[in-house]
Image 1 (cartoon, rainbow, N blue to C red):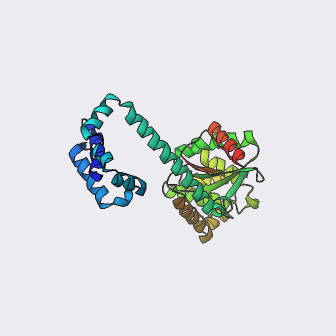
Image 2 (cartoon, rainbow, N blue to C red; image 1 turned 90 degrees about the horizontal axis):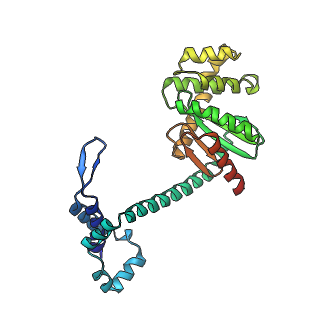
Image 3 (cartoon, one colour; image 1 turned 135 degrees about the vertical axis):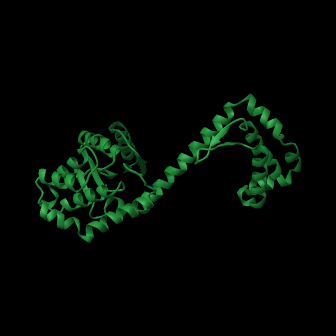
Amino acid sequence: MYGQIGAGLGAIALVISGYTFMTTVNKPVRVNPATVQAAFTDHLTQNPALVSSAVSNYMNARPGVAAAAPTGEAIREYLLTNPGVIVEAINAYEAQQQLAAAAADGDLITTNAKEIFEDGFSIVRGNPDGDITLVEFADYNCGFCKRAHTEVENFVEADGNIRLVIKEFPILGDGSVLAARAALASARQEDGAKYPEFNDALMIHRGAHNEASVIRIAEQVGLDVAKLRVDMEDDAIKDQINRTYALAQKLRINGTPAFIMGDQVVRGFVPADQLELLANSAREEG
């Protein structure tokens, strides 16, 4: 039975044997169908649990089915005659993978909901009483975050009922960390009233951030720079950033920007119109 399955997989390898792919070191590798068939057959033989018990029982009870199964050459001929079947199979597989990933993201959000939506330190913008919460992981040195900042602002303003939670997630060097610490520290002044303006100014700044740029912007928005410098070094501020790092790892977020809305995690840039669709979906799901 396993040989028949391996033969089928080997036949697919025969179809693609005329092609090459590039390894991570950019060296061309030609597919060897015989090796693929042997490897799959051996792997299935050594790991029978990979084949569902229902299929195994069916095949074992009906040896004639296995004997009459198409040969590798027949499968190869069929696939060459009907190449669209391969595309259809790949599309179906990708759709299944996307559904599985979405379900996994939903579980991760449920498991980590408290830390995502109510961690006690992440800054809240937009409408604090909004019916939908949008969580954004951002880095002040990230070009796509700078683009997303305008899109998010437009979306939040147009909707009027979005609670925006900003996760300071500095992953692009020391300048990013410095800016994130300053942003969190700024919330300790005037009950956080200066944070929105400071956040906006840090995001629209052209070029990478360093101590000079952060302090200059802090002065421009009217922050108490002496207090800011002290608060930036507070271990509590550093711990807040470390908690965000840990949360991102749990959520499989390793880049910026990243967004959470409803039961969905979106990793990457999202324009305002797509955010609107996500909000509509979240509201429909209740």
